[in-house]
Image (cartoon, rainbow, N blue to C red):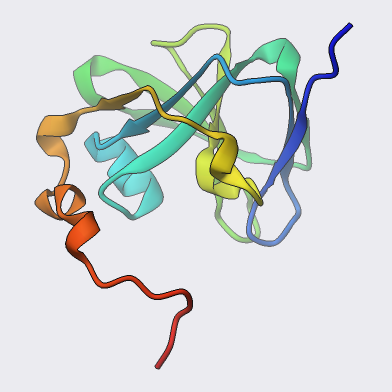
Length: 138
């Protein structure tokens, strides 16, 4: 038997967590209006695992969001800090999505597709031209 990597994603305050086993079924970027609203950014990074690869901890609040093309997503978020940590979508039955930025080291995620490119803000395509800094200064 091969050792499967275990990774943990947590909300901002640590009250909720998701432990994943093995590689995700898919990792992707999305710029739909729902993801932009959920993340507060023009692009989101998410990864999807099968239900048997996920263990959740903590009491999450649930909210159903109507998404593009008549789809729905059931979001689970922390009632204390508000972080949306995991969700399910009718378009991906049997899979659980996890916010890529919630992992301490999200470097393992390799997005294969970028959805809703037509809604992606123009600055995303110019990100390599933005001045980069190692830390946030004054």
